[in-house]
Image (cartoon, rainbow, N blue to C red; front, side, top):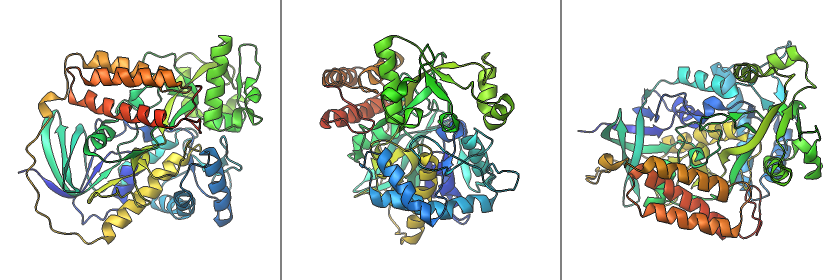
Length: 483
């Protein structure tokens, strides 16, 4: 007989682990992750976590978030995000999370693009995600299971009863009274991306299949400053905090061309900076660089130890050397449509939080460092909602249908690479109507081939992105269309 849990959490990043931290030990909880727990986007997050400085800063933080999101945001969700940070940040610190502090013991704050003040806290200099993830793993009091790949949600009559998954490559059924989706975004769909290799849009694809609404899928965010000259799918991010501290983006002759695109130059919002770099490279054929030469070497090594070490291993000596950069896919502003408690309309026993969800916080473009905060805030709200509702005893139906034996087919790898190229070229930073229609046809063609279940789920998500992009005729935020 398959095991049954009170709560099943899909994903062991910041959203999934903070949800687990807020569930009492008396609950029978299982946290699952696709690979090893630290192979997730949280672990790779560098810059930091936004937090409102005080009650007075909430209004300003909301304004900054709305402006970056091209006012497509849900204002109520943004206000909840900012105001709740006044509870969740002290809660993390009280539980033992150590953010970077100055000589006086006070928190150190930094500024990133499109923030009007310094309100971003960090840990380990530029290793915030890694530090938070380790802290939350240590705090986790529930069972955590690795090598668990979810390939179906068990849904009948508007209720979720659990999942079908491979556990150590064996098809397994896991039942649960409540399922929390915290599986992250869609990064592996794109040829150039900064995401963990595990973030491949499977769960979003299941939602498409089940008729669960995805929203704002046209708003894919591209990080402006990424080192893409590596053979690996996950490209190396150069945190926005570098520009926040004063690094320059320059052309081959050292010209700071971003001021031609926006008066804020390097500190314009991510969509503008990414588009500016992409457009400049396309028009001039030049390489674009991140220049750190204005920084003191000792200060740089202390403030950005992770970047210093990672790129030092590749032969770079920062801050003396400048490095070539390109935009790359970074974050999905859209996702599974939820309310402010992570609930999915018309679906009992199923929640979505973190990057997997679309709460309306980010609008058309995410404000830098709001993602870690979103994971924490909406994990707490989902758990509060889950614990407050009356638990009804339900009879679990029999779910006979299983895709466990057709997850992969022979040509999947070839089609997967084709899809990643299509997503980058036609549904990327700058889009055209003709390119989107071509992408739609190519995706449709792939869907009609002999393919495995996991590729089909990716294609479902890709279809949702291209359909949303075609439906929005005008440029807005990270959705930029030329014709």
